[in-house]
Length: 154
Image (tube, rainbow, N blue to C red; front, side, top):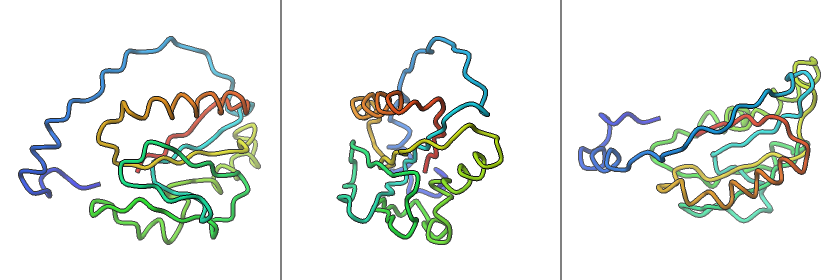
């Protein structure tokens, strides 16, 4: 991630003007043990299957990624001068640690890997606009019996 000190002063100043979202705390729950939980991944890498439409800059929608996806069938439409994609090109697990999740399930550390995982576009200037898509993904996760989600921000 780029440091503010590395940006042009006007760009750094503009970034500091955007106030953080005010999110009220939710009610506390007691989750199932991970060894009994179905776990999904949610990435903001702009990753998607090659047959899916690419993400456009500032996209507020998401893409579904199946648990058995071949990494060779994935591509990324998140382009930014602030993101070095070389690690992604070497190992997609850095933005979608699906192979690591399968290893955790095989080792009994988690109950199972969810059937579907979700990708959003990163760098959305107004994250509150993501709420309709986030609520929809939340419903889908619940419908699929997902107990825990690992957010992989990019």
